[in-house]
Image (cartoon, rainbow, N blue to C red; front, side, top):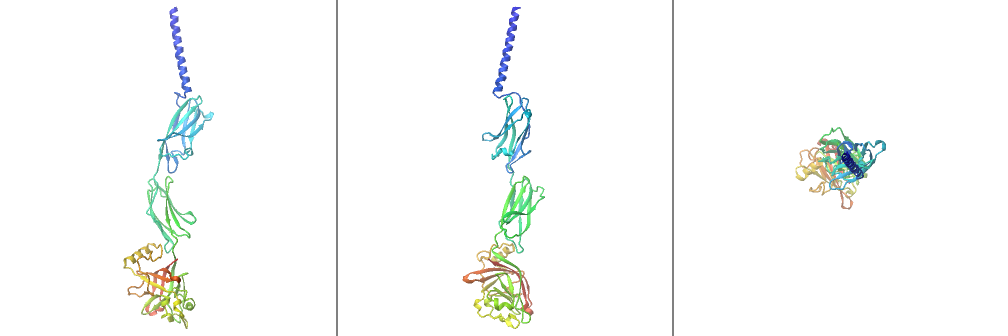
Length: 433
């Protein structure tokens, strides 16, 4: 009986020791922050768009944490390759949410961190009993390709109707949302038109006719994709180096019984005047128009008009020139196609590529005007018309040895040899500034 009691006593002592060891182990685990009890974390995998700086599938990092023990603090760290973990958020869990807490980390928590090598968000939980737990939220980055704007011109001038045809190609691998065209006519860029309803098209051929607005120096094309990522392209609109006068109509000298009011022209303001003012404004005019039954219709250099002046009449009065050397010395040259350099000029002109009116620019490679007249006479080579040889280079001498270049586009000619004094020409003229 006594021996049995000793065995029982040893058994009781052994169990007490095991219990004490187990209690000590649990106590040590708590003090060391370790716990075998895991929290339940429900969350998504997240992708950060490096271009838009937005997250998907939510606009912020969200996770629900359920804890049997109870939550106190949650420390969130950004994990990136080859970088130390960065503390980005501390959540203080309210007492009423300690067992079921919705964690939210806003995008702003990333600050200016480079997320291109991000792999995860590590959440370290401090519980109410001072034990800890960890969980991982997967986070990766995405760099969408930028939209592209291609084949747009670097610069473009308005045509004679103040229009600029804007052409080019917009594309995006992620799909196009809209294309905007803006100008800086008001200083800051303002939208002129928006091409929308693209339905995520991968490519779009822009073909838009822009109407020039005064003071515009630049046009901006903006392509926006489905991620709201933008690409921009600037088209310069150079300050026009010339003044354009359109649809000018001139008539020849007329007759004593029918006075003409538009037979001489002023490049300074693009106006015309008639025979009755020739004796008062002759030193200001730049060229006259004269019709002949045998020689055709001719634009004339005023300094070479002495032999035809008598035919410009205002009733009984005629044009008299006291000192012809005081009149403008204007030289003219019909630009006749067939020469490669002149053909290239026509190509540029037809494409509205007229960057200047300089001898070494737009007229480069062409000998300067030397003729006193530019003639229209059907069937005669070297004369102008309204279809083929329709451009005339006019050079007006100024005081001090300089000159003003002009380019005339002949648009219509009405000439009848039997009534040559009343022939007419309609033209546009570009005058160098």
